[in-house]
Amino acid sequence: MLTSIGQYVGGKVITAILVVGSAGAVIWFWRHPEHLQTIWATIQYVLAWMGFVIILPWATFFVTPWVASKDSNVAAALMLIGYAIPDIVVALYLAGGVHGHNGLSWTVLIVGFLAAAVYNLKVCEFQAERLEDR
Image 1 (tube, rainbow, N blue to C red):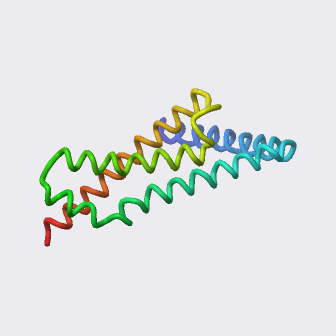
Image 2 (cartoon, rainbow, N blue to C red):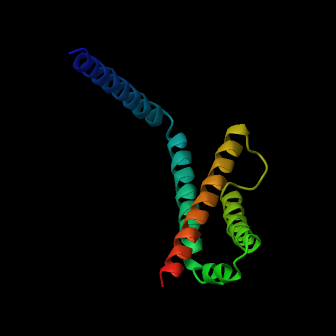
Image 3 (cartoon, rainbow, N blue to C red):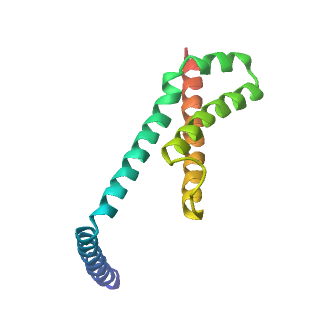
């Protein structure tokens, strides 16, 4: 019984927070349309960068078998670094360079770089496993 009361009250509190937050966002962007344009530009840059990160290891699918044939950790590390460098360059280009960013921007960029590196590692592992199955 206590659980159902907690769920009911929690649901009402979350609904109230969402309604107030949504109304606040609508009012804010109605009064400041330039902020909305900035957010959409940022979202477009993030989606473009994510598309680049997602496509790069699949577009260079022929690199993984060559590196796997070397059977070397150094070759695998160089391949992952080779994927990370273009990811970083494209992100910095879309972000407007390395100057003029605050701590939050750098934190978001670094977390994005790390996420891209993990993605590249997982894709390369998947491609290497597919090679072993043949």
